[in-house]
Length: 256
Image 1 (cartoon, rainbow, N blue to C red):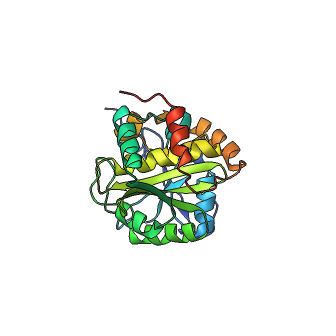
Image 2 (cartoon, helix red, strand yellow):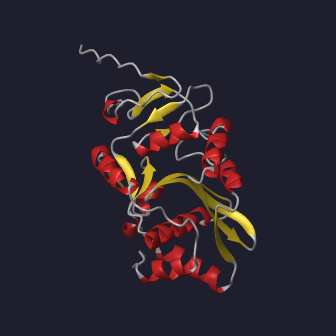
């Protein structure tokens, strides 16, 4: 009987210690493909260093901080976003009735806390632990984490939060308290990115929901090369102008 190869140890990071190369992350035959390191801290410099190299934290209660660099990497190119016909009609109807407002960074704290109660596809519980919430609120106060919020009839009903470094956007999580509210927020982020010249939104891991809206996996090596270029580009203004909707509608052929 062929024995499975022994699992490589996961490097342990002390605070301030550099990350190992992303190519050393666990591979497809390891128990947790994409796992790169454990330990370290969730302060702003460490998070900036991580995202700048294509690394993100993701761990559950009772675990140490775990750092990941998945291969392939799921990305959404704003130019390939699929604005489905039903979602387009809903947005246009809400706009005509003056019921919809997109706000950016209006209530980041509420958005991330509501995302914490919205598990990812196929997962139980949440990975957005209190330590993560505190860390990303600090990142937000540093101007590097942002919320895109769907407000309908004056109520926050959906949204997402993300990290922005240079011309690169890293999507983190979404929530919805009304049908399609998170999709509206994602469409607004895409519209903002298209208006600002952002060419890639990192989605980290593949989900059917994101794939249905145009996201696709790319090899990690290609993602890292594009990431390096994007980090050198100008950051978006992180404000939403309603004219972005018309630019998105006019420049897109919606799916049925």
